[in-house]
Image (cartoon, rainbow, N blue to C red; front, side, top):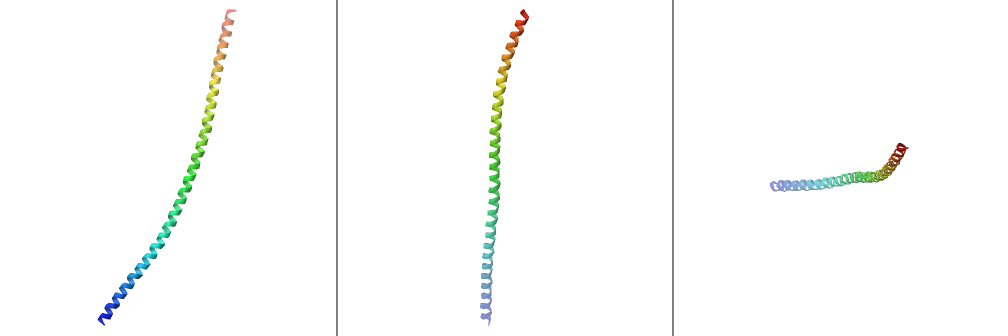
Length: 102
C-alpha cells in the first residue's frame, strides 16, 4: 500500500503540475491577445493624433505663406508710396522756391 500511496501522490503531483502549466499557458495566451489589442488601439490613437498634428502644421505653413505674400505686397506698396512722397516733396520744394522769387 505504501508504494500505491507514493505512486498516487506522484501522479496527483504530476497532474497538478500539468494542470498548472495548461492554465498558465492559456492565461499567457489570453493576456498576450489583450496586450496586442491594447497596443493596436494605442498605436491607432497615436497615429491619428500625429496625422492631426501634421495637418495642423500644413495649415500653419499655408497661412504663413499667405502672410508672407501679404507682407511682401505691403513692403512693395510702402516703397512705392515712399518714392511717390519724395517726388511730391521735390515738386513742393520747387513750387515754394518759385513762389518766393516772385
